[in-house]
Image 1 (cartoon, rainbow, N blue to C red):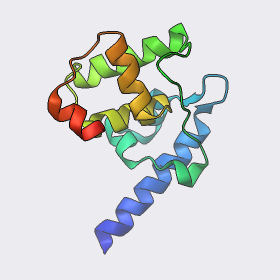
Image 2: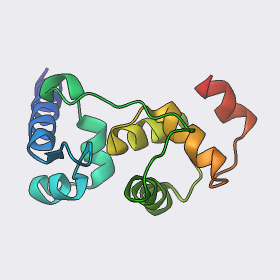
Image 3: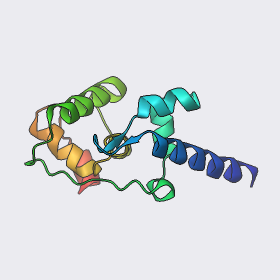
Length: 127
């Protein structure tokens, strides 16, 4: 019970901190700021983030839409830094949270850019 309470409290702290670092002009959270404030690695903060607590709604951006250079740069940089483009479905879910874009849209965009190799196992998990 103590662990569940700590987990809920951490989820609440991360989500409210993320809300304070949300930029409506960028459409996403400054996760570096969240990480620094909470003194935890970005992937760990993303694991505890719950959009329903803070009211931030995930965007949908199809592969065909204009993502903008800043958004594409953030997507490529984050995946290269934390996952070296070798990713599981759970990793893609974290990418979706980081980008505030549906993770399947992130997968489609990165695949279209030729930035990672789709394996049969990953394809099966995603679809």
